[in-house]
Image 1 (cartoon, rainbow, N blue to C red):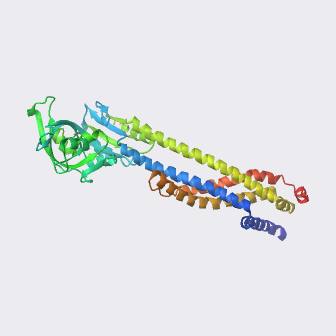
Image 2: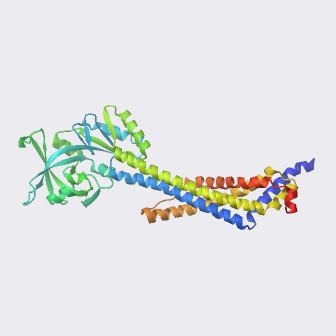
Image 3: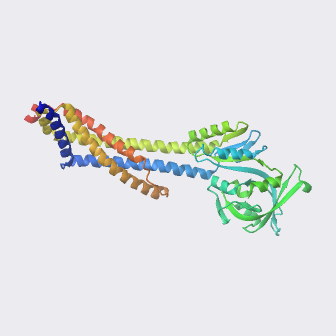
Length: 411
């Protein structure tokens, strides 16, 4: 009775001794398997780190294109970023701000567009007397956060515009030879006619000159309250410009939330930006997943060949184990444990190597600093262990067909 009780314990002890011996005994094939798994884990870790961080960087880069969603009056007709022919209550912007907790990463700015007549103060010879331009009333700091690609070429870089200050586009500044400290006069027509009696002037000091590479280079920017006062449009705005980060599905989800919150207003995604952003991110994801699948498939074949060589080398050892009473299940478990252990070691080392390679690739190819994405550690670790275990199944089939008598005779 005592012998029967001790037998399972002895078998378990023998199993673990054989497992440890299979790992510590020097074997070139086992080293080759570890190296193969290390390469696979390193490349998988590098690609996952690149995808995760490049996805985040690309989302940030797409923000430089400005708003991807416009909230406006249903009667407004959109043309680019401006809306013509419709105004809405500026109180809608406070409601948008309250939704920022529900839409992660939402950036928004209220905007009022007004056609004005701009002239230099004082006027100078050989310069235009005036020019009709679009004046933009907004919180300039919020507007610049919405479009981080704008550059301030001269003047104060940060901070809101003061009550009597303005920012001018680079082309407009060049035509009127404006620089920070100069003054301009903005005149807005209260009606449709150009009669001087219908015009309300305002003088503003140029605080900064901006370069956008777009139509904003021909515009002038003042605070929202000042432009509302200038045009007699207190409490009114033209549009609310928003940027919702993420892929197309995320943006569409945000648009649906906005449409439900503002049924009386028109919520429109800017399709060119939204679908370009989604297409680029989808292409990157598909490319990286395809590369990872191809690489892991090649590594799996390499590990399978290596484990097959290990099984064939240890045919006599397996035959002895079976002759001493080891079952096919016990020998199978031994080889699967050996393969998983090799995957465990390679997965940890491969994650570290892959993180280093991702940082180097990001620096050399993309010119950005990529940080290690720690959520990829358990993914790489688990995938490497699973790959090693699966690659062991084919050699295990060979092992199960080994007959002790035949193998020990040397046939």
